[in-house]
Amino acid sequence: MSLAPQELENSASKYAAEAIRLDSQGSRGMAIQSYQRAIEALVKLVQIYPDYKLNKVYMERANAYQNRIKALQMSHGIEDEERPTPIEGSEKPVNGNGKGSAPPSAKAGNVETLKADFDDLVMKDKPKVSWEEVIGLDDAKRAIRESISYPMKRPDLFPLGWPRGILLYGPPGCGKTLLAAAAAAEIDGYFINVDAASMMSKWLGEAEKNISKLFKMARSLNEKENVPVLLFIDEIDSLLGQRNGEVGGEVRVKNQFLTEMDGINGKSKESQLYIIGATNKPWSLEAGFLRRFQKRIYVTLPDNASRTNLFSQYTKPLNTENVLRIEELAKITDGYSASDVKDICQSVQLRVVNELFESGKAMETGATTRPIGTNDFKEILKNRKPSVSVDMIRAYMRWSDQYKAL
Image (cartoon, rainbow, N blue to C red; front, side):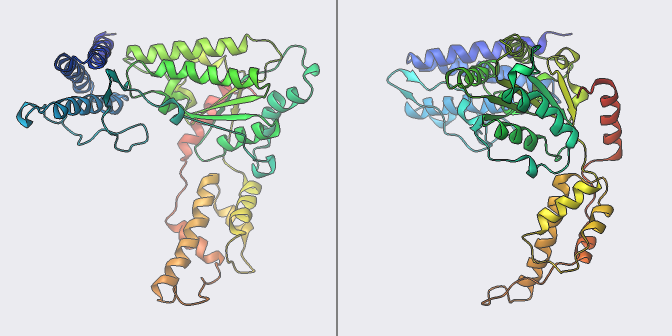
């Protein structure tokens, strides 16, 4: 494999670190030169590998460095013609949330470092979700309870310990996050929710640091507060997936995650720290990481009974006809995900609300929508197809035959 991507990334990292150091020391002219060199390395990387997954991240970094250059030039009266031209394809920098971000400012020789705010990457909470809210998925609920709920209640029944790593895989919109939250709620533990794609920081060298911070925070909550902690990492394939032409940053992130996982699995058998990874693309995960997830659970599409329950749940707050045939709706939505069912109910509600507004009576006192009937759902379903294809389901089943571990 060519080392060009890794060399360019390392070069950009070196120039960026040098620029920040010079910036903090007040050497603005030299800092600007180093920022520009970092930008050039990142732009070259994007040009050479136009289809690379991290190109958006690299351009965000380049935009941030260029904004810092502009801030330095403006603060010292440098004329417009001396300022660098905008990076092609982007008008303003964006932060990790997709919003515009102000350029960093230097204060008393101390420059704000260009890095993602770790606190914005994680959500720490004690969820209030019951197992009753997880419709269907009985096999998945049983497997999670065996690994998390039961050991918490009776650890003495598990002389060989219990699994700390659980992988939830399956089509999108089928309740993987809800499953993990319900497990955390049952053991009255912390639920740390992380989007793995966000952990691939937009700042050079920050991704592996974020992984280290994440596990350190989870261990601290578990040990110092003596509270169970469930670390849920969504889209974990963004961290642990197989890729061609990996650059150095991705390799370091994987190694860091592997080290942290091995540390948790090797801890005392009394530890109450769990890692739950979720993915819609299990086949992209490297085989070396699969054994760290002792439980690998297929979160399937809802069956007929589950769809019936979902339609009952989502139509309950709506104004419906007394003869709404929910069982019929469940049958004709075979192959739809749980989120598809919710979207269908929402679309039907939007349909009758739109009718009310178009009639001109929406703002009249006491005006309300007409009752929703079965035919309204059928009309919506004419233009609403399942979000999961048959080919995708076959792919999940083939992978399950090889790797499922309930």
